[in-house]
Length: 376
Ligand SMILES: *Cc1c(COP(=O)(O)O)cnc(C)c1O
Image (tube, rainbow, N blue to C red; front, side):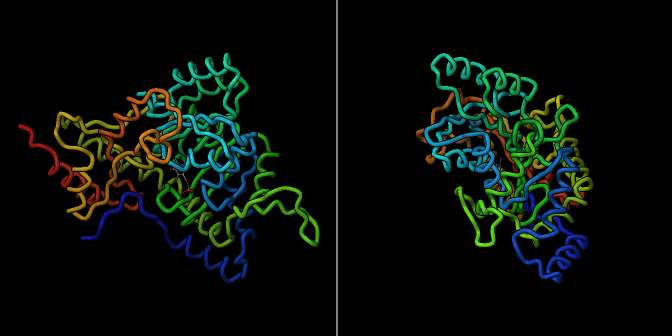
């Protein structure tokens, strides 16, 4: 039996053909026709005017925060319950990540804590330079509350939709809900370019400027003129070709991830002590990963389940370790914490790849049930 991975790349003949087209055309460069086409196709898919293809999602976050004005000495509000890259990006600009707990309903940035924090900061004249929202595991944050709050204080919002391509919130595409949004095409995401990212923005000028900064801030002169500091953050034409193939398969991948999720739900719903990451009625998640929760009363931790599945050659992972518990962010201020801590203590990510067969899912379920205490 083959190993079952958490969320492996899922590629096919379309990707192969496009990649070879890029190869044969000798556009083996950063930029090229596939980059332009991939940008246009992503923009169309999420319903915006333009997009900037980048080397990674993290590069996108770095540029996004700079675009909305974050600089040295600033505070940037970031949810604690996320992948570290969300907060790393703020530090690249010399800003300080200020962490906030999750809300129980989505496991994303808690709007009540944010409201209290912004009110207090307004009084102290220490408003953050930006708020970063994360659409964790492919489910959107509570934008109906977060966006008006930030608008009230004039604080820009950056949406880390690295995990959420294909998800929607009140019918609008994840990534397009805030001032600037980013996607990741890392190897484990819902579509991949092996490594890559994309930036979208409400203001077309932000996208144009992201492209310029990502291309070493090179101005149009024969001798390469630079009046600003730039970055080597552009996506290569080869990888954009791969991404175009992946994007064509996205509807099918979304449907499959949902079916995998539903199969887990059907098999585990009645299992005492086993729950699922909450799903908000405001949106449709992309089901990037199915996350179950294990009641501590079961006496089985996510780490126990991962170790047990590993013995069956199945990869699983605990939920993200909150950033306020990470040594790298030990000095970061933190507001609240019990929701993220509970999600980390109880959450376990199950294999969710779009290439999984029903038999693969059943193999995971069987192995998982073997890790849980027997029921009567
Ligand atoms: C994957 C991920 C990133 C980083 O994306 P890369 O393309 O790997 O740089 C950022 N934020 C979150 C929430 C992610 O899951």
